[in-house]
Amino acid sequence: MLAYKFRSSSQIPFALDIIFNRRLYCSDWHTLNDAAEGTPVMSGPREKHAEYLKYADEVSQQMDRIRVCSLSQTFDSHQLWAHYASAWDGLAIEIELPDVSHQIRKVDYGAFYCVIDPNRADSTEDAKRVLSTKDKGWSYEREIRILDESKWFHLQKPVRRVIAGHRMNPAMLEGLRVICKAKGVTLCKTGIGDEGIDADRVYPVRMRRLSITQGGD
Image (tube, rainbow, N blue to C red; front, side, top):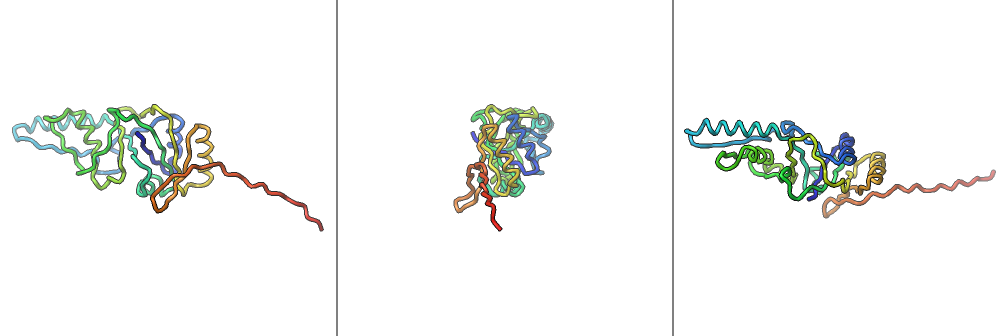
């Protein structure tokens, strides 16, 4: 399964860490940019109020053990480039993730809250459901989340491709090209046309030879 990690131009060192060390940073879920993240709700019979409160506390404790890395299923999104790649001067890193993994989930878009139920699931499963549920207003992100207790999620395979935004500084783009060549990573650059966003491969800049002739008096 292919996924894309966007980085702004000010976060290039973090992007290089992914390329060189083949790992993704998983952050505390409390730092996610949606203030409504991690909102579980539940309802039950009055006589089981204490039992349900205990279960909600168990889910909350499990959530606090989980760290999150957010990626997208696509790079073809104007909003993603604008929001997460500093208005097209950043980049997107193409990563290959396992098709099946208990650590990886596609985000479910609907209400901003997630219903939990002690009769339907256990606290660990519900904690992961809460942290992979977002309001439908974010659906353009087509988000994939890595849910792990560790700070780093190590990639089984090296980075496949780096896609630079079409506003990336030329010097930075050239430096990135040199690094990608050394690491065997394909470097592309975005273009915008009638059919959407594409990614064309970046090749070395060929300097023109200047012939200097000596003029006579």
